[in-house]
Length: 415
Image (cartoon, rainbow, N blue to C red; front, side, top):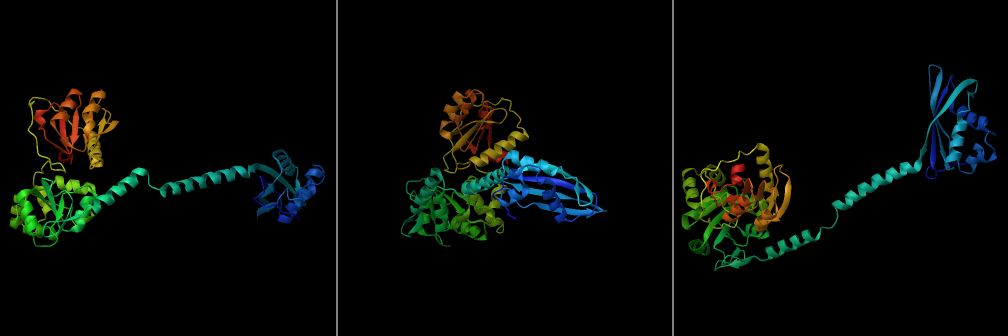
């Protein structure tokens, strides 16, 4: 008896069988061939169709309970739709199997190609997802990677002590003093070119000389060793500001966001020296949390003088939803120098660089709030007032709240 490969089948006939008695599987198959013989003509004779491979192996599964037999019949077919339907309908004429009454009912005719098509679609989805996860980076990612590599290559040896440093030490009014070469490399990677390392526990003469000429921020690891370096530096050099990496982390391993956050949270050198002398076991970051934070840009630009005050302006109460949205957006914008303009429903109307905020507000009539990675200054406040903006949210502010008709918020006020 010929067989048809399941791969070659186009349709599969599914039928149920009920028999009022106990019969075996060969009895059912014999009844199918015997009682349909000569019924459909020579072209649709089941035995001949099976020999030629157009009908596959007939599968019968039966189960006997309480003297009755029930089961299913499966017939694969490579005939066309009409011929397969005729063969399926012929099964239902069988009313007896052996000495027992029987009933066969065709449940459905399955189109195998539909099942295969569904399988192909699902597999294609998996392959596409895998390809997208492993795809080559876009041009911007490649450019960023190359730029980061170039910045890392810019490290130089500075002064007679040949200290590892960024290339902008001489032209910068402010410098960042770190512990080692790896810290300088990490800051260079994130575009801080004014960092220099002390390269040991003792303070080199080069650092002492720079402290006399530059505004110096000491940036050390968030551990006990960081405290010791702060003590050493503040005892022999004129230190302006002090900050630390997050507790348990080193400057060489922290992210760009953590670097900006640490630099915004710096405290004065005198204050750090005083607190460390009183409570030597306390970490510098604990000192930062106890002291009012200085509102400074990562670039440490000087604070400008405020302009005409508005002391009697009534302020708008910030809702919890607005506070959470503003805080989340501000955190995402750190290091991007970008701005997002929102409407009253807190939907984003547009995204622009900080330098284009004033131009954007002139063309947007329904701006409700502006969240940006930068310092709130006189020009931005003026543009927001002219555009009837209700909230300005920045990293820090050079304008006091009573000097503007706009509600001014900084990262410290959202925490």
